[in-house]
Structures are given as C-alpha cells and as structure tokens.
Length: 254
Image 1: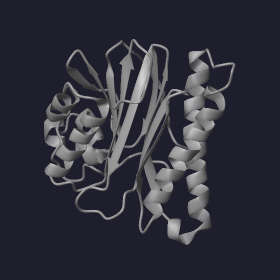
Image 2: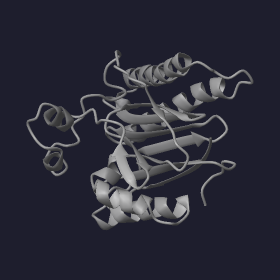
Image 3: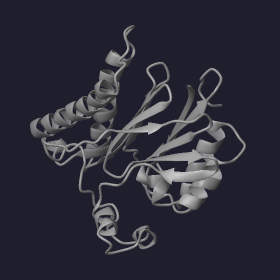
Image 4: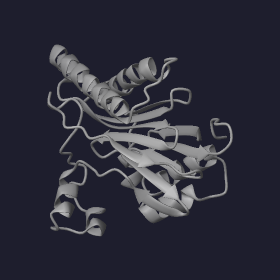
C-alpha cells in the first residue's frame, strides 16, 4: 500500500493568528496535527512544540534501515512520542510565565503497509471515507462526548450545544496523560481526513463526506473543505490533512 498526502491550514475569518500546526513525512509514513490553546502566542507554541517533538521522535525510528515490524513496537512508539511532547510542554510552561496554561490537542497517524496506527488527545479528529461512507474513527475527549456516551444528549444535539469545546484531555495539562493507540485496517481507495475543530465545528459530517468525495485532486478537496468552513463563519483556525491509500506509487496529492 502506498499513500498520497496533502495538508492545508487557514486562520479563518475571526482570528488573526493560527494556533494549528501540522507535519507529515511521506517516507516515514506519518501525519500529525495539533490545535493549540492558551493566551498570547502560547497556543501556537504548544501546537508547534507538540507536532515538532512527535515528528522528530517518529522520524528517528521510522526512517531507520531496520523498521519496527511488530505492532506493539509501533503502538509504544506513538504513545512514547506523545507523552514526551506532553512533558516538554509542561516543562516549558513551568519555566516561562507567558506560557502558563498553554496546551494543545493532537491527532497522530502512522501508515504502515495496510494498517493505520492512530492516537489522539482532545477533539482534533480523524475520519475515513471508504466506498462513499464517512466514518469518524476517533472519539473526542470532551465534556459533550461524555454526555453523549452517558445518553444525556444525542450526537445531533451535541453538534450545536454550548460548551462543545470543553476538553477532558489535552497535552500540557497533567503529567499523567492517558493514551490509547488503535490499529485500523486500510483498504486501497480509503481517504483519511485529519482535522482541527475549526472544520468540524463549522461543517457537518454530510458536507465533509460530499466534499471529500469530489472527483478532484487532494489539494482541491482540501481547499474546498477550508472554504466551506469559512463560508459557514470561519470562527476558528481550520486545518485539514488528507491521506489517500493508493495502489500505485505514493505522492503528494496535487
């Protein structure tokens, strides 16, 4: 299995700065997206620290001539890289008053052969489009998601409920960060979307599926998703990463 990658980000229509940050490496086979939070420039610092730290750790191991062959090894690698980033953000905040209370979400995927190793913290999401059907394959770490899980509100109601951005988990909050890494089978033709909540707060799943299904290049579909979020109000930074599982040689989508 080969993979084509494409990513775009936009500050949106309300905010002057962009606290989202992303990195991907086609050779190492990973994509990481972080959505920062905090006063002044602290959110930008947290998200860039997280993505950069994780990418460095993954590149070190995944680009080796002797790859990690065991699923457990890859799962531990993802968990260790996110935990290390969390510790670095906590240390930076403790040593600089202007970084106090900074934090970030993260969604991280490693594509190896016909499997996706996926972990996330917060409400940045990963979706999979397969056979025209869109599935959200991460579950938000948020107060509203807990209410949905408890049967107190419906998923449809949660989409427009107040307080939907109150997180129960983020990097830079506590030293002990619960992490789960899940393994998803990949099929040729799958299209994966990693995104910040600047997209999902503005655009519902049906519209996301429609735009992802367009018969255009990855870059055009990424642009269309961002334009739709801005057309709906653009209240937040919006970042989209598209990863396409293909039979032929992998390349960045054009």
